[in-house]
Image 1 (tube, rainbow, N blue to C red):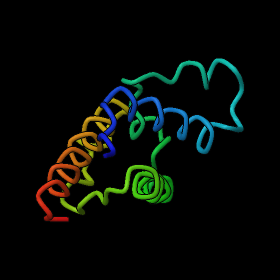
Image 2: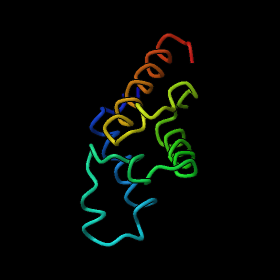
Image 3: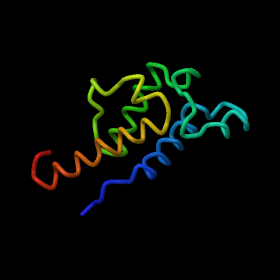
Image 4: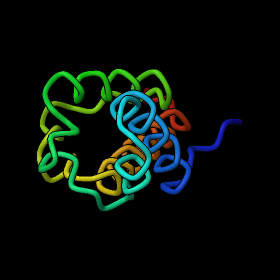
Length: 102
């Protein structure tokens, strides 16, 4: 049986993805300054195109689709809020699977 990843594990994977895919062309300090509370929207790291790419990564990596009602500035303001959302959705998906409601 597969166990849903923890919020910390989700945070690590999403952080790595954002660094690699969205900040790959930036130099040292700019990339190393990215942490769980970096304001992704405010800094323009997440724009509509990158948000779509991130949603596709989340679906592929964690097998959960983020409902349109949850794609908000509150849920995508920083890595910590994204990881919390994905972990919450992943647990809900996992629990639903246990009871045959996937």
